[in-house]
Amino acid sequence: MSWFRRTEKGISTPTELKRETPDGLWYQCPECKNVMHTREHKNNSYTCIHCNYHEKVGSEVYFQLLFDEGQFEEKDANMTSGDPLHFVDTKAYPDRIKSTVAKSGLKDACRTAVGNMNGNPITISCMDFGFIGGSMGSVVGEKIARGIVYAIENKTPFLMISKSGGARMMEAGFSLMQMAKTSARLAQLDEAGLPYISLLTDPTTGGVTASYAMLGDFNIAEPGSLIGFAGPRIIKETIGKDLPKGFQTAEFVLEHGFLDFIVDRKDLKDKLSSLLTLMMKPA
Image 1 (cartoon, rainbow, N blue to C red):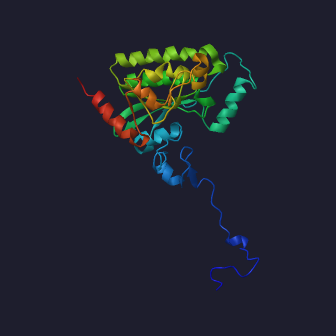
Image 2: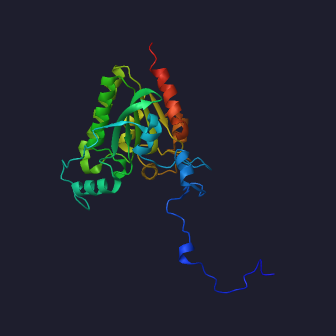
Image 3: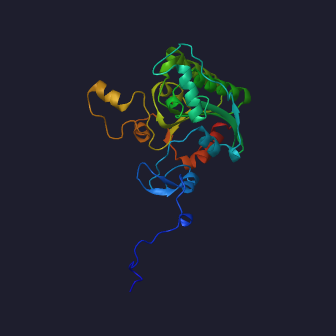
């Protein structure tokens, strides 16, 4: 019976009949290690179908998820950083900007866009971690400030999606000034009676957390996001104590009163629309 045993040696398959799996066809979840089809992962808003792990995504994904039909108008798209301090570390700051632009396809760590969400106009600023760790430089602050001004002038709600490692060290004080500038613009948005929702994603740390990320009428977050000012390692070394389990996760921050609620990315558009409908109702 040779049906179940190979009796001939040296059987080979011609090259033209071999089939290789295309790159990028499968996605392995870094959390639970399960594998799923890339298309399935994308259709699930880039969250794991097994454990609901939220993959880190950038502004383009959020804009496609939130704006109707993925249609939007980007504001100040070509704004790029200068070099006010003539900063040099392993390379000159302008050279670092150029290489990051070429690698990421982004002009800086924040994009602002306007469009409709479930038929209602909205202004969204979204950070990109892929551009120097989503660090907050002068361009990031200026884009957010201009987005807020646009929202005020056109009477739209403003949504800020934060994802950042903190201030950009290459711009030092110029970076820290963005905390005050954006906070002042948000105060003007509040005076105009327009809603501001802050969405904190993984990670949101440093000067971003210490300013506009925590100033929303509603502060919300995606599940499992790292949220804090200093990192856990720095805090542990400073206080000399072990940190609680789950420290600085969105769930921990919610439990301690710094968030209003956590929202699954798959439900984000509908939850935001419902919330803004209530907030935009005339008194």
